[in-house]
Image (cartoon, rainbow, N blue to C red; front, side, top):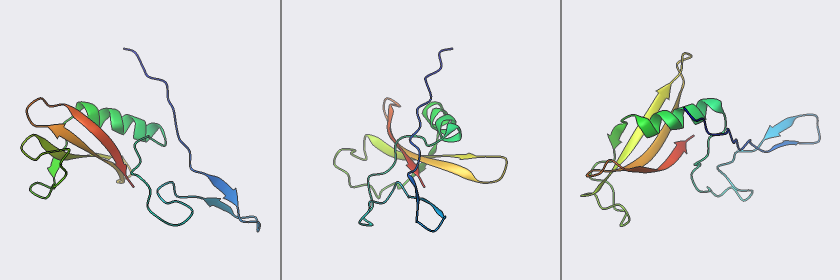
Length: 111
């Protein structure tokens, strides 16, 4: 079994000048506007969750609420995969799945 190399995008860390460390949220820009959804795992747990989502069946969400012309509802369904760890917390990933072929893509982490 071939294993892909682990590539992580870590959050930005800075000091506020008073000895406190600040971790900046990667989902918001400096202006406070929401950025594009995150598609890359931040750590090993998220990388493993992404692999699980690609190989397992998620739960259908947003049925009859999708109006995206790129994903006609007759061909695509929006799915959610949730990995719960032993501490009771979880990681959630949303993605698109083609109803006819089972093709999956557009994996996004929900923070």
